[in-house]
Length: 550
Image 1 (cartoon, one colour):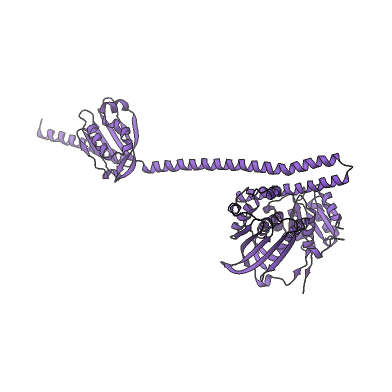
Image 2 (tube, one colour):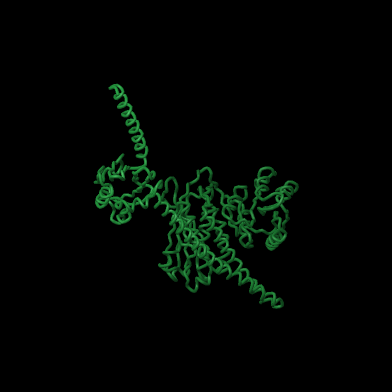
């Protein structure tokens, strides 16, 4: 063989070896993106070579190459393996056991922890024996700390979700238990005394007594339903703050009308006091009134007959940004509350189970609702109370004072100074029985009424007879042909004089959002069904009261 041929052969061999080395380096580099270390182990002599040491693996005090892979693994693991995982990795120190477990063309993996700079670090070792005629194995290790952290985070999320689901289920069970118990109590009264009245139709005094007790139970049942609906809306985040320009004193009249009726029926003195310089403010009056009503209702509810309840509105000098703080103070001389109960008063379904309180009934949601409403409006609520000495609840809310030119110098007459006798009211109601009930209530006050069975009929009647033929319109919301919202918008915008006539919603739609929708459509107020005759008449009087000028 010539020297040239030999050189050519050597060059060919070198080129082939170089090409193979490039391939191995490329493979090692590619695998190195996933693995911090790769071992190539020759099973004939147990010699091994370590490729591509990266990441935290570089800080480990272990050999990078040698002639006894399995023995040296045992020594290395004693130095760097986390003690609780050594047994798990012992398989890699026994060649025969390891190869029997590995088999051919199969990947085997083990997850374990190594001590990297004194900290346990999660790794996954993967090994493969390519084939029976290839007497070598490849062992690689990857850092899975992030993967394990993510898995733990996911497991925690699952655990938290399960806990939340269990708590929600527990809360649902508690809710159903409380609601079932507290709703069945007034239902039992209604059913029981209805049966008693039917059996004693010839005993007028007995029937009257039954009707009074049925009415009381009906009112109690209505309060329970209202509380559940309010709490449901708040928990689902369906309440929005909608601010408007209002006269804070005038706006309290609707509240006062309702509370006067309740307090009078219990022979409780109800007094209102005002210390307000700027009456015109920007506020979410629907939610303000709801919070105040909850507190005032409790004051009347837990004050014995002959007691006193005082409602005060004060304008303070304190500021909240560009807003001024107003205080609403409700003070009573009722049964009061213990210091221990005050710690839990804002929790749902919370009531102090004294004998007197238990007789008053309720779901214990009123103050929980009030607290959430006050928080939504960036306000504060403070309660001071002593058993048998009464309670003082102070709600502080920030309002932006309206521009001076938007105020009026007039003052609304008290509803007590207004008479309904001789008034003419249009009742817009599709349900004949509801229309009959409303007409009867108004008739007792000397009011004459006409009935329109839907919004379209009401609009046509006002166009033909003229708006001035009626003093006020009571408008149902859900009706066939044309609903109350659409009818109100047409009356306000397309009927001559329609912008001046008071329109009051009278509807079974009882959510706060429904009340706001009524106001947005152009109505003056919203009264929810079932109708309380005294409350309805007080609201009507409030909106028929003329403005008095000095």
